[in-house]
Amino acid sequence: MAEKVLIKILSEARAGEEKENMEIDYTGLLNRRNGVIYIRYDEVADTGTGLTSNMIKIYPDDIKVEINKKGAITSHMSFVSGEKTHTFYETPFGAMNLAIYARQVDIEETQDTIHVFMDYSIDANYETVSDNSIDITVRKKHI
Image (tube, rainbow, N blue to C red; front, side):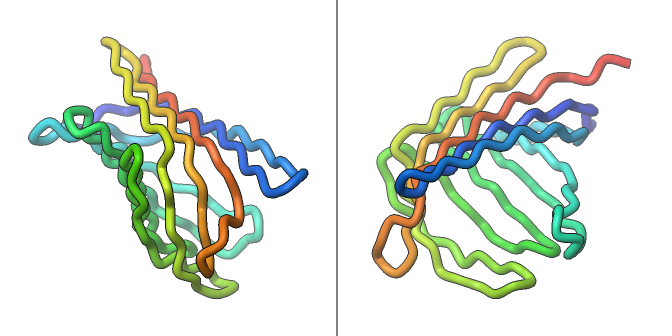
């Protein structure tokens, strides 16, 4: 059965001397199946281009995280520490093939909280376009 959760996502993107930080809060649903944690939430783009449904899959035993997006933005990103994965990232403004190199993936879980930290780079056309980090905290929503 799905649990209501609060999701806080802190992200940082660095490209050369430029750095962009974002902090966004969502309400979503958490399910567990076969040792995998599923977190679902929706986001609306600031550009008014529509709704994107997100599914974060956390594999604690494999120390792996997948982020699937469908809607205004469509992609399937996979983060495995020390590995490079590839994705097709589609937006209303165009699509591109990207490579993601995950330098670090940490997953911690307590009774009421799941914490995921990922540090990675994004490559396009065989060149690094940004170095990034995402810090995701998921807490049970107490009513």
